[in-house]
Length: 69
Image (cartoon, rainbow, N blue to C red; front, side):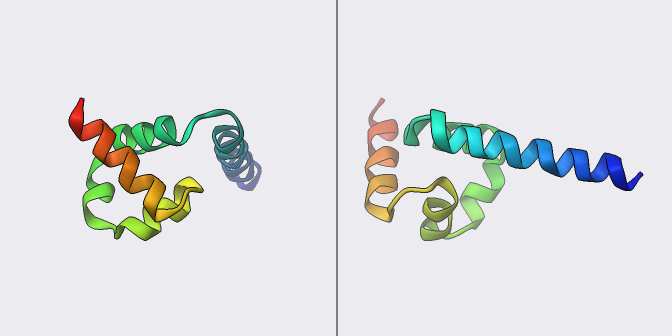
């Protein structure tokens, strides 16, 4: 049971690292919106920016650009 839990967290961590390396900032934000839409509405922007690995200003530009589409 512990091995399965460890494997799950390893896979999650590996996927997150790959996302940070290979996805654009915008794609990471879109994935977050898709996977956790409620969290995005409840958590402050600077926490979301930190989680995505971007600065607040960059996240604001991404949100503005997406709202214009």
